[in-house]
Image (tube, rainbow, N blue to C red; front, top):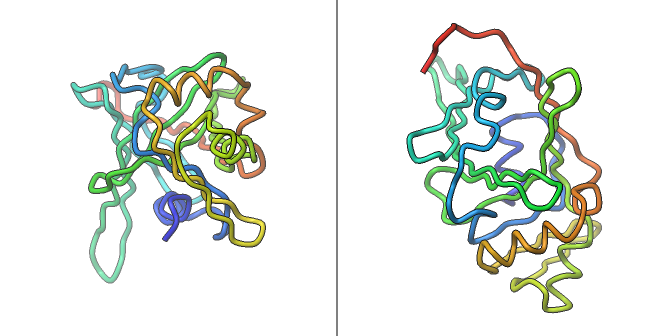
Length: 184
């Protein structure tokens, strides 16, 4: 299952077979709780409620609770947020995975969380030109880029372009839900 497919399985929203960027290292090697007050809480994505919290280590945690086969099932991911240049990025992974999926995000004027999930060809070009270490796999119109560059190299590459030049197409929109005051 591709990196993008894992994200889709967790949030159950988009069609399969999209391009993706995986990376061995998060954009930031030193997590900061960037946008913590705006990210923490409950979000609605289609018909899924997504719970977001940050741990003491500044790593974000995301959970979705499903009713499956007569019992609850909790799906968990962790993420590291980082700013590089004018963009904000999520390095997201299943808690038991050793690599991250890379996404750009921003907040809309109305407070919605907008996640850009489909990378442009800029990542594949950067690997081909030697600006980033990694490999590129093509399957028809879909491209999966697996990056091995360290966090500082990845952040420098992201800072050199606008998020719109790096991610396009598939966009996830999460709507904030009211939650209990002081939930921790």
